[in-house]
Length: 284
Image (cartoon, rainbow, N blue to C red; front, side, top):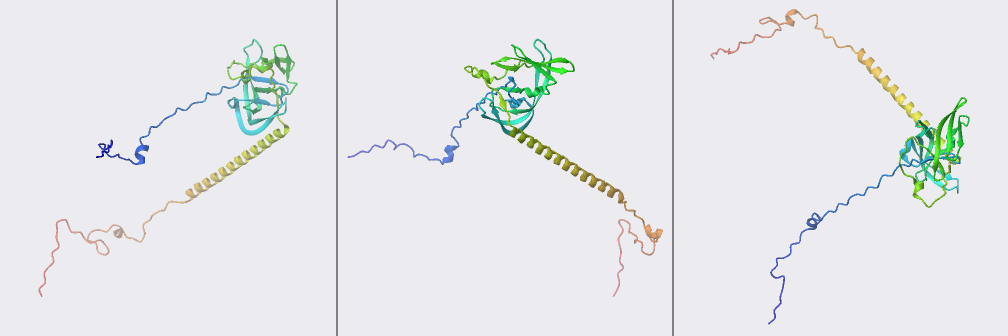
């Protein structure tokens, strides 16, 4: 006698559900998005006599901005660095050491180079040379603005990593890329903008000015056309007179206002309410 033991004999048959049954009940894992820390702005503006262009590393520093692809060359090894745009930047600096007086200077044609070590103020800002003068001291550079025969303090610099950094009106705490490399002792921050790239920028400006002039001219032309159409519609609406209805003069007063019982084309007399018509019977 043989006996086969089936451990599943007392269990109900398995119920197989469609795939949608299981997919709807799967656990959903929500991963929190990791936000990148906001990049601080760099406030290190280095005065450079070897650079022929101003440079800003942060997009937020620009007051006006135009996206423009170009490149600049390093003075040290003539390698290229990418330029993403160009615009104007305003900087508020102190006039002299120990003084709280400050003023705002405007830098034009500033290149936007995010991958550079610092911001650069070129000595091209001090043009014409007859209006500016600067002296070098052991503490930095002192700038003066000439008005007639007098020299008025314009700004000054302080030593920063062996370079001359402009002293701003407010001591803002930002990012300093040069301090992120403590083992480096010498920094070469000078940049030049090739003449070919300047010509490219001037061509871009000329094209943009031409496009803007065409846009203004087209807008003015469309405005004149709309004004002309509006005037024509106004003249046309005033020239149309409203119709004047007059009754025919050959109609008599009785025809205009027919009376009951009148003979002719007048309306028949109406029977009073509740009356009935009686028709006489005729014998055959």
